[in-house]
Each structure stands twice: as structure tokens, then as C-alpha cells.
Image (cartoon, rainbow, N blue to C red; front, top):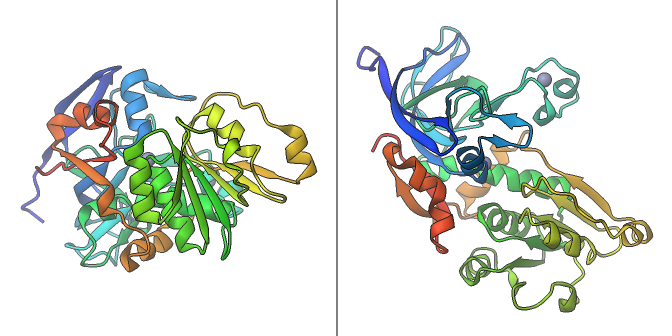
Length: 344
Ligand SMILES: [Zn+2]
Ligand SMILES: [Zn+2]
């Protein structure tokens, strides 16, 4: 592997609103790690939030941080104990490596591990750079015909898979997805793949609603024009992907008896719950935090064509244009998913 460089370019968040390309050492893989040349990295709302506010909830950026956690790449070197993952293997990266020994990990809920090392979450660097190291078990080989960008977007697809599992979406489910951003579009498609026979998506963007209709054969409601309650729709499952408090509260109030509401979208706000509705209908409400054990399913859903990932990608940027990538959707209504290509 003597053709590997010793230094690389990395896009570094140095302070709120200040991202610049810096030279960093190419990391050395630990015994159980692989070194991955990064091909594509999706941008996520949390990256934008770190860039604009320096924090997401209780996670605060105190030192320079490399953002980006939706990544794919090619294995170029292996630690001493790694036996699989021949160099040249294309992989999708699960960006959080849990401790493996705490109560949550041992209970199978490793997404709740308090000691997880998660890309682009202070103080752990992310993937807006040319090379990253990762534990071999969290680098998943992808099929030959899956694009680098689709392999990166297995991460947000995992969010959707986890949400559908938590909501117990099953054949015949009627599913309401509030918010048709990238995660909402993936949640709608995944619900379909899980057997939902009705999928309704709400948003205020005509463009995004059209995508939901095309990608997930979803019925759509433009809640800028018509209230959700007035639609009379009564779903079994709510997948709240807008992060909008008002949308979330109204949507809970539409859930059918024994319905399940899952809060996926980021939202630090408080939500007034229609408690009588929740009680008399035995509604279950839960949040989701990332995902656990989703990569194999997510890769299979994308590889089979049941979920379309490539069509979400609307904008592409090199490493030197990360700030533009992070703010594209605020400037351009037609921007759905921006991808950073560190090798370009
Ligand atoms: Zn994300
Ligand atoms: Zn743990």
C-alpha cells in the first residue's frame, strides 16, 4: 500500500459559520479497522445545524470538527487483525461504533450506547475528507451496481428502516409521513416496501410532494393549503419527519385506534400532546435515535430497487464547497440531497 499518501485534504468546521479545507494526516487503521478512501458523503440537517449554530441539542462543537456522516468509499488498507474486506472492496459506512459492553449494547440497543463514537458528533471527526478509518464490522460491502452515492445514502435510509420497525409498519398499514425532505421521502418508500398499502405524505413544498408521489406512490397533502385534520385521514402509523412542532401535534391527533407515532425529525421543541386522544385510543408515541442493525436490510432494499436512493441526489460538490453543500436546500427549493465528493 505504498501508493497511499500520508496527508489528505479535510473540510474542517473551525467555528460557527467557518469551514475551510485543511491538510490532515491520513489516519492509520487500528488492528480491527479498515482505511477507506471516501467516495461520496451525503449532507444532513445535523451537519448544517453544526455549521450554523455550533451545536445540536446537547452536542456542542468545542474543537475543530470534520462534519459528514453519510459516507461510502473503497477499502484501501486494513489493520493487522482484519481478514475480510480485501483492498478494493466498496463499502457503505455505518458511522457509529458503539462500545459493545454497556447495558444498552448488551441489550441489543446499541444506538442508545452512551459511549458510541459517531462520525461528525463532537469530538469525533466525520467524513468530509479523503480518508477515514472505521471498525471493519461497520463497513458493509455493497453490490457492484450500487452507485457510490446510493451507498452513502444507506445511512439516511437506515433512519427510515429503523423508524418503520419502531412503528411496526406491516402489510396493510396506513401510514402518514409528515415532511417530504430526504428522510420523509425515504420513510415513505420504506413504508411501502414494508407492505403499507396507503402512504400519505404532507409538506408545504409542491416539488417535494411531487417527488413523494413519484417515488413512493404516496397520496399527498399540501398542508400550506389545507389542514391535515380537514383531510379526515386516519392513519395507523405516523412517521413524523418534519421536525415541525405544529405538524407533529396535529398529526398525532389524527392517529387511528392503537396507532403508533414515531418522531424521527429533529426537533428540540416541546410538543402539546392531545392527551385524551392518546389515552382513549391507546396511541403509542416514541422517538427514534439513529438506528441499530439496519445496514443489511437497507442495502438489500436499495439493491432490489424497492427504495430509490440515486434520485434523491440533486446537487454535488467538491471538498472545497462544503458550505455551499450544507446550505443548498435553504437557497434552492428543488435541492433535496446534496452530496460531497471528496476525491473531486
Ligand atoms: Zn444524517
Ligand atoms: Zn455501549
